[in-house]
Amino acid sequence: MSKKVLVTAGGSGIGFAMCEAFANEGADVWAVDIDNDALANCPETWRRTALDVTDESAVKKLFVELTKTWGTIDCLCANAGIAGPTALIEDIDLAQWQRCVSVNLEGGFLFCKYAVPLMKQAGSGNIILTSSTAGLFGYPNRAPYCAAKWGVIGLCKTLAMELGPFGIRANAICPGSVEGERMQGVLEREALAKNVTEQSLYDGYASGTSMGKWVTAADVAATATYLASEHSRMVSGQVIAVDGHTVNPDP
Image (cartoon, rainbow, N blue to C red; front, side, top):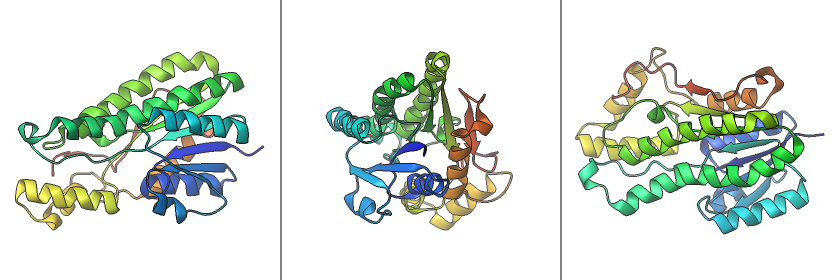
């Protein structure tokens, strides 16, 4: 039987790469994204649902549909996140803070809340949470994002302890600087905040790793498929950085 994998923010970036990697391994994939246009560009063989991951009624409705369609879920990749504001703490509006924390942390909580009962019933399952190297280090001008991503790691550790007795594993991936549209936006805002060039920041993010390069979405997806496989059957509660080894988190 094909593995059943649901990926949030699956319409682009890391989420799309995860969906693609699992599909290439023969899994049935369900991509969730807030962006209808992004989902429309996904392969028709993937199931696709547009929703806001912070909307509990929409998430609950999705899992009713998933249960009718699949019966169970083998792997949840709670990957949805937003960069949030790039600003000093005194310049961040409460609404900006709340939205960033809600998408990055509460979205993962909601999907775990509704996936776990299905996994418990099956006596197995994998939860893969996307945190960030921002969940391992502090970054100036990124307070809400860092706070949320640290929270994701706390959620991961707790889930691993709660769910291990039921045969369910939980792990977190911490991507570093990932090539793509999202980080391009971060570079633009950070360059303005620091009054430096985008190119200098780009180079700084790369030189801040021991491998001297940026990460690709495929690098992160490969780690996700490993964590969902039997090769990692005794790996749980772990926080795995896919970042080329960050040695200087502040470019």
